[in-house]
Image 1 (cartoon, rainbow, N blue to C red):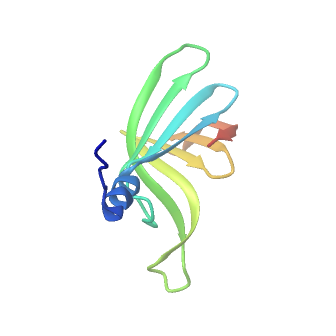
Image 2: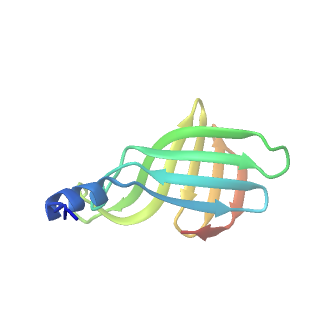
Length: 118
């Protein structure tokens, strides 16, 4: 029997490349969020939103980024707030507290509270 040794650095890099995913379920939607950045990054500009209407079954996939409040220096990101996505003149927010907010222009067309499955 031959024993294969895998360098610890290789295992660390493999794990660091894995994306994290979570699901928000609201009364009307199921939203899957996938963060496609290396673990340990404070911000990420490569987040995938896959949302499905629980009523019609229609779905949409968007690309977006993490959302943070700024530190007192006005430059550094501090507290994680959630995720934001744009689709034409529609703006989607998925907040850490479980809110799904969709605005078309300035008009709010969806504002629902849901539960996260991590």
